[in-house]
Length: 298
Image (cartoon, rainbow, N blue to C red; front, side, top):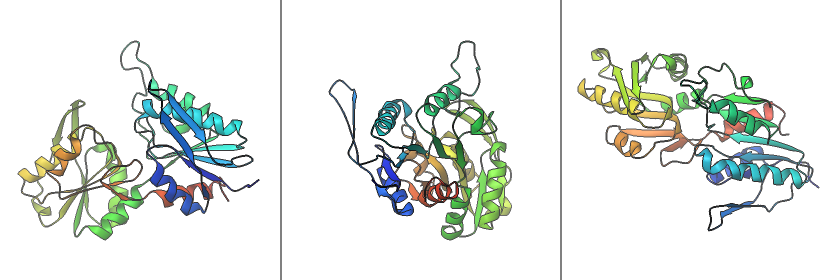
């Protein structure tokens, strides 16, 4: 029986799971999953997990499809003798609905947190959408760590973009944008955004004449519909600035958002918190350091 941890990636997180196992010098476990013709999930653990810490790697970008597989895997690991379950969910879903905006609405951030907390012993995630909650501990009943990818974005910008101007989309991003700009050694500005709907945003862009010799770098933690970055990119073009480099942590890119933004950007780069063609910044080292620092692994 081995006491060393074992990394168990779920579908969609295989590449990150391999990188994390390599960083931790841990065994990469084998988890077999498939769907029956009626849509039900089949899950099989094909590794020896008895007496071991199992690290489940599962990005929850599409939680309704992923959650049951995650539950089946977690419960099977416990039945097979895993002594501790750590969920590494680089992207954590169901964080937006954090209050009852309309009568009768489900406060899904709290409900989802309760479901996850019932299955694992610890959660590690990256840049969750904490808005009305000051910390994950307000809704999660297990120890939950929120890591920050800003240093990774800053280092990539410093190495890859000549004379960058860091631009944040709204006041909520100011602290985050300031940190990226400081570490990258670049000037920055924060725009004003008004959201009228999921696909209806209005961005106020100031006079950017002093920055015309700079490459705009648009950063945001999540790109879903892409409307914010598209609106800013159009505004920059109208002011005769160069096409922007767009950098994000979580590349959701719903429907045609990526193609629409790619028409306007010089380059789009994201971290690999979830698999996407824009992935160019690895979070495996960040996750591995956190797991070691917290004593989760040896």
